[in-house]
Image (cartoon, rainbow, N blue to C red; front, side, top):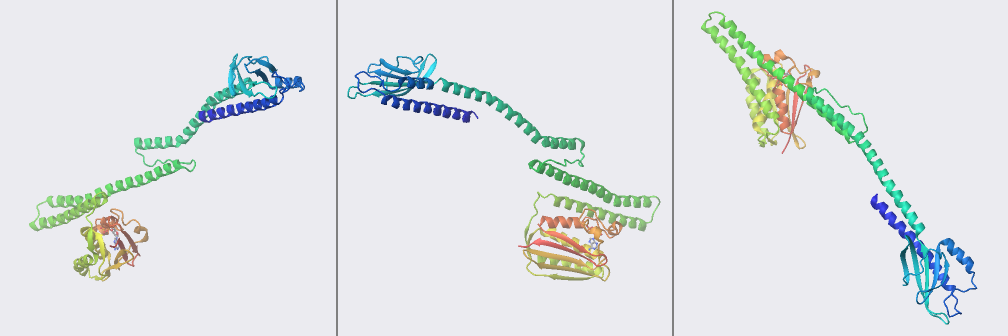
Length: 438
Ligand code: ADP
C-alpha cells in the first residue's frame, strides 16, 4: 500500500505541475503576442483590452511581468500583489518560495526586434491550491493506511481463527485419545471440503485402522493364550490322574506318549507363532532368489504323495514346466505344504486332491483343489484370520493350529502375490495362489 500510494502521490503531483506549466506557457505565448512593437520601451500594446486581461489573469492567479534587460519590471499584469518583484532571471520553468508560498515561474527571453528592445517575460502562478490538494491527499492516505491495516489485521485474525478452529478440534481429539486410550473417538468433520477435511478424514481413517489392528491384536493375544492353555491343561490333567495312584509301567508309558503329543502340539503352535511374527515384520527382507517353481512343486508333490495314499486319496498334479519366480524356497515350500496338508485333511475319504500350476500373463497360478467337505460361505472371508477355524474341535482333533492359512497369506503377500479361496459346502475347496512370474 505504501509503495502504490507513494507512486500515486508522485504521479498526481507531476500531473498537477504539468497542468500549471502548460497554462503558464500558453499565457506567456499569448502575452508575447501582445507586446507593443512600435515603441522603444518594452510594454504591452495599450490597444489590447488590458483591464479585461488583468482581471482574467487575477482570477486564474497568474501574474505576468514584463522586465527590461536588467530585470527591472516595466509592466505587470494580474496577481501583482503577492508575487515578489525581484527574482533571478534565467529562461525556463522553476519553483520558488516566497513568504511560505510556492510559486511556479516561467521565464521567456524577449529578443530585440525593430524598435523593440531586449528584455524578459515572466509568468508566475501560485502553487498554493496545488499544495493544498496535495496536502489533503497525503492526510487522506495517512489516515487511510492505519485504518486499512487495522481492518486487514482484524479480518486476518478472524479468518485465521476460523481456519485453525478444526485443527484445534483435531488436536483436542488426539489429546483425548492419548489420555484415555479410547480409540473409538472420531472427529467426523462437517465443515467445507478443503485440506482440513482431508486431514480430518485421514485422521478418522487412521483411527479406524488403529482400532481394527488393536482389536485384532487383543483377539490374537486372547486366542493365543487359549491355544497354549488347552494342551497345558490336558498335560496337567493327565499328570494329575496318573500321579493320583500307583501305576504300571505301561500306564506311565501311555501317559508319557499322550504328553509327548501335547508337547508336539505346543512346539508346532509356538513355531507357527514365531514364523508368523517374523513374516509380519515387513522391514526384515526375505532372501529371494530365482526359483524354478515347476521343480519345487514337483518335489513337494512327491513328499505329499504318501500322506495322500495314507488317507486313501487320489492325488494328481498338472504342473507346467519352466515356471520361474523370484522367491524364498523355504517359505514357498511351507506355503504349498500348508495348502496341500489342508486339502488332504479336509478331503473326504476316497476323494481327490489336485495340484495345478499354470503360467498366466506375467503371473503364475497355482491351484490346490480337493473334493472334500467344503467351507460354508459365511466363513470364507474369515479363513485368513489367525486361529480362525470353521469347526474348532474338529480342526484341533486333526492337529490344526488355525494358523496355516494366516501363514500362507503372509508368505504370498511377502512375494507380492494374491491368494483366494473358492469353496462350496460339500463341493470341495480350491485355493488359488497367484505369484508374479520372472
Ligand atoms: P488349521 O490348522 O486348523 O487347518 P488353517 O488356517 O490352515 O488352520 O485353516 C483354517 C480353517 O479353514 C480350518 O480350520 C478349516 O476349518 C478351514 N479349511 C482350510 N482349508 C480347508 C479345506 N481345504 N477344506 C475345508 N476346510 C478348510
